Length: 366
Image (tube, rainbow, N blue to C red; front, side):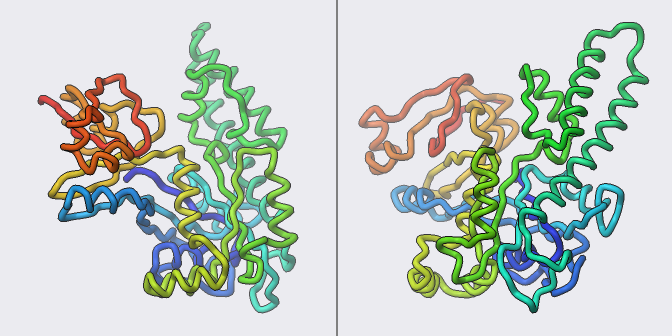
């Protein structure tokens, strides 16, 4: 699978409730006290895609295998986490292992649910976590810079260049800005930054956890978060974790009725999964036949051999060509044979950039 989204936030903001609904189980303990979640809970979640079932029907596939993403429910964080306060060290270590951060913010009032700071203020909550992540990155970068300087001998231009880059990034972080917002001058610089594995270099999505009555239009809390992020690349979505908990135990027919009553087009979890997919800059390609119709996940911008490698490493090593049909061409032609007959099946080589929805039959030789 290889793609993980970490669900983070202060204690008691609804992370574990959301995770339980997301994975449609109750494996993540949910309680009204800080540090309820200590070890991270991990769940694999199907990425909803209506296209897969359509392809399976046309191909008369015996199996339908959707693609998945992994979500990790990480312990709640408090001020001082970068210095080990609370469960800070564990929290930060678990975040380093994910590809993207889903930051849950409490945007509802409820006197029966304790807030760790005794006040509902999602902007301040977001600042706490962002500050802790930046401080942790500064500490990590300082250590890496110290180690690098020990390795510099004479006037090694490559190491000197890397050191200059790290110093610029250090100054950027020290001004209170995230590594994600640092503008690398070259592709090489960006690759070097990626290898530093900084927490604030990961893409981030804000989830405003609101009450049922605010799920359609939001409230003053969520509006402030949205306004604060209008000029950034951070996306903001509304979810009610309590609503999602109720929906998760319903059958499909009851879910549709429930959503209609709430005037919602889709569940918040579907919105969250798709947003996580977009956050990681992912696309889906398909393999379709009588045996199975299957969806596969790939980073946007990669070539056909890389897609082949997702299926099996031998496919990438011995890649010859990719017999390719676009999703809509497959539908319009009523299958692979129809696409061949109408000239819609294309032969693509090793430099072909995969498009979302491509259907492949890989030819290889090992």
